[in-house]
Length: 115
Length: 109
Image (cartoon, rainbow over all chains, first blue to last red; front, side, top):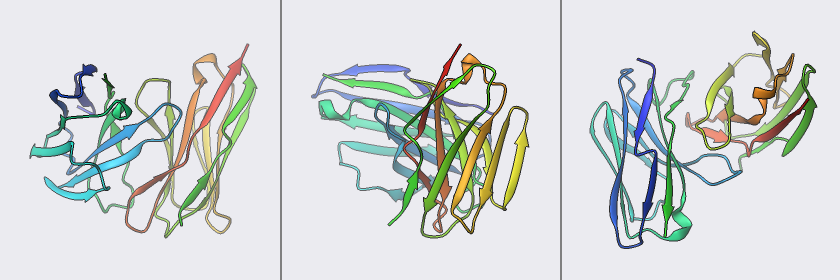
């Protein structure tokens, strides 16, 4: 299985809602990532988990809360988002964080719209 | 600072060859990736270079010159499905991916 899956594929939420994005991989990868991508821009790193511990938090607002329940799962909890948070949210995984060859495998993304 | 430059947009004809350039200035270098991304979809891996030279994979080739901080992606026998954005990303000294803004490639019949 060389796939990263993400659910839901699309999400529309109000500014007062609480929702969660889910990501799963079964490749035995020990590093998992959340990216935010706006149209016509490159992916913007949000969080990195290495061996289920938060390794990097790129100054992301607290309305985004990551969680790594186990080595295969990565969640992103959303609360009180703003319309400017509307974007494609990508999950990725790689074998390990500090490997030189560290190809990241991306999930299909969740298209988030905040009303 | 860290900087990766790619052309914003390129146009090519079906069946032709196109070269997409990428120049970089990063804190350390541990390899360079090229990813393809169709609109609204996730990036998919195309190539990885860590040593100088050319890596060939079917219709796609990628070249690296570390001394010049330069790479290119060469696409041959272009097909309409090659219309996409092509992202250059460098692995820096902290093993983090530094992404270029991407090059939108438009293929015309």
